[in-house]
Length: 241
Length: 139
Image (cartoon, rainbow over all chains, first blue to last red; front, side):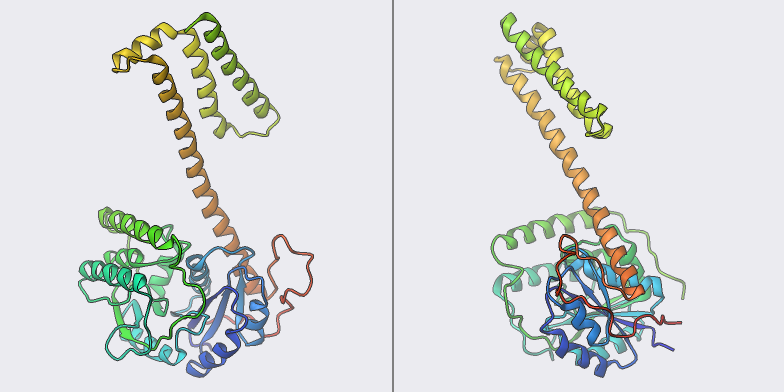
């Protein structure tokens, strides 16, 4: 009998970080199944993940972070998991916080965000452009959700089955980076969202917010949020009970 | 516009239509993509045939120099074509994403390695056989 909990790890060229990460996840949640979504890596990410005891869903081509986690949601929906925990493969997220995320989810929330910025959270300092964006879009999401959201871009999350299905089936789910716009949509659809403090470490390597990306990011987010706000609430896919 | 110029424009329109129809006949172009192109070719022929009327329309919309009006019309049709292609690209991108996700899920369920697109013959890429137990769904 499985726990009904699936940990999904989107991974692109993470053969070096996975061997350290997978045992820590197994230690934190021994009963959970682990699915690594290899987003078309050209290194040995898939083999390393399998060797570490994880199941591997491998995209034959690189699709993007959002598409990778959506593959995880689709897998979870097909297999009837009651909860999905989502953690990045690069070691930025501390698996020790997985238990807290799951416990909070079990208190009756649909989405629990692991925040770097809530009091109690440690060890993370983002580049200023990213910080500014997160601050602004966090404020917009907080206003719409009626609840303070400090870290709308976090990839460290716990999701209940009905939200997982909503994401798995939604044409709105972006293939690149789900962000405050998705959060706002989720809030408008009536899902219950909360945040808890988690431990996060600064990422090494190139940021996704370098070059012209910040300009594209801000434009996309503004447009997307405006569109989401003008839409009528999307059909709720929640299950009874 | 002189008679020669009108014949030249009509000739361009006819040549465009011939190219489109040949591509359709040989199934190198789908019908759904051909309609806007046919509209463009036919538009050139109509413009050549009814040039005085087109000139009158140009002045009616407030453009004193009719060739500028023709260029504007052509530009509009071309932008329409580009937008049509962007729509099709978005659909194709979504379909490709769905397919790749489906392949990934099926391979995860079967425990086999997904095909490596464009490099299937390259050995030693790290995708060996499954070494960990796969399967076992939650009840």
